[in-house]
Length: 144
Image 1 (tube, rainbow, N blue to C red):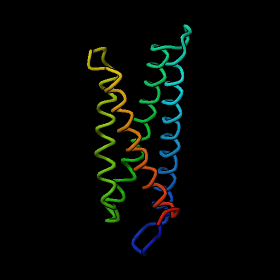
Image 2 (image 1 turned 135 degrees about the horizontal axis):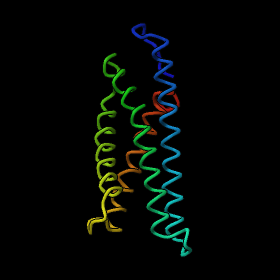
Image 3 (image 1 turned 135 degrees about the vertical axis):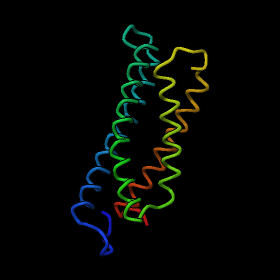
Image 4 (image 1 turned 90 degrees about the vertical axis):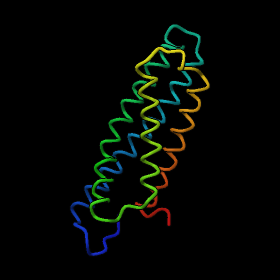
């Protein structure tokens, strides 16, 4: 949990920790949905295939958007308190890029929506996820 340096409010820190944990849980759910969408994509049945993949991936995207609300609140409070590490800004930038490209994939049917571009987006999202994981583990005291 966040270590208080005498500047913080214990109730606020507990709230931020809880929101951070909820957000991290949602992101794990997103990761599982993306993996499920890849499994469904490989199926040749009526319930599987590209349509099933699209629906599940869209659900994962919506869940990722929901988790961002928690992240924004936590990042805002860390910025206001002056305890925001610079890695949060890098994580936020990559996350914003991932969400922007994800939005393009969710709403369109353009030629730009290729397997290659989707793999690039997946790699960017995984890097953002790993960055968020390291931030979470650092703030919870599991990483130095």
